[in-house]
Amino acid sequence: MSYRLLAEIVLIMHALFIAFVIGGLALIVAGALRRWNWIRNLWFRTAHLAAIGIVVAESWFGGICPLTVWESRLREAAGEAGYRQSFVAHWLRQIIFYDITPEVFTALYTGFGILVVLAWLWAPPRLDRH
Image (cartoon, rainbow, N blue to C red; front, top):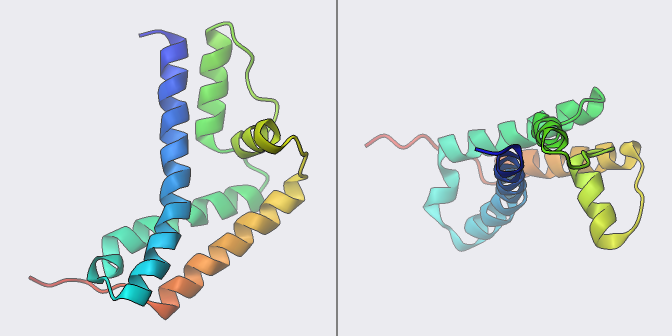
């Protein structure tokens, strides 16, 4: 398997992770309003809270997402250019051509994490016992 293909797989995994974090909160809020029982699944909610928790902790401690590092190294091994900044910063710059400082990302991640915690309190998960 080529380094480029591996880099693309890591990119897809990264995009799916982001979709899980953002889409997960949207589904939790919609599900709470529509009384969908599955959004209260403890495993789903714990995984969701842990996912944003990792992102927030990385941001607070100045870390870079391992998926970003892996993809960048794989691209460099394939002879391509790696990232000079975080995955999200890179793609936001590509999409909207606007630089955002790491402090703004930390504030955004932290704010999103607070929303996830509030959703946890508003529509708490339940452990199904069947």
